Length: 278
Image: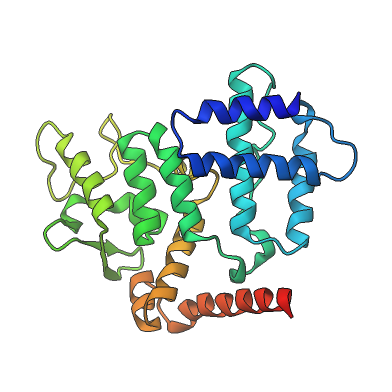
């Protein structure tokens, strides 16, 4: 029965996902079912408490946040499918958070994995929701900075965005081509070109988005991550790719000490990987 449900779910995904992604989902479902400790209750009877206990055990085994999040994303999609089929009453993944796993920056989520999850989920998101999510993970904006962002701060010619911090600081951050394309689509959707003072993230009623809107949107489009998680993933990526001083500037940190915490996290990750083999 369970294997038949998994096969039907994977078949349904063929219309929207790449074959490699579907194969990954299949491996995740198979792994969760086979590695479950105790008598397997079946997918339709698995409770939130049982799923949480599974992930807690995996975390204690030293599994990375990236792997945990990937498996959780798979289960969320799978139970969304079961909900649509009327086989379960609710998604047992609701209420389970994976953002503070391990409690250290050494367990920061993998940027590429989050991007893949966003690309998959964004197919069902509105243009405004996609712009909001990509602005966070591709520029490292804080929620307050995102809400206050005006069209006058977006320089399409220079491919830069001026981010104004809540502490009155300012920093320029480059805009990737895919994000520029989304912003251009959003601007073109206006009946008349927006003024430089108009907020980029504005609802249909003309009001700017709220913090709760940003939180809900980012969680849904990213597969469960918070805006802070996406920002941390961006900063972790920047530290890997650039000098510490550049990463500090793009992050908008007041001191190098704050940015250096991401480097320390990477050192801890390397130590864990080293210990697995020696």
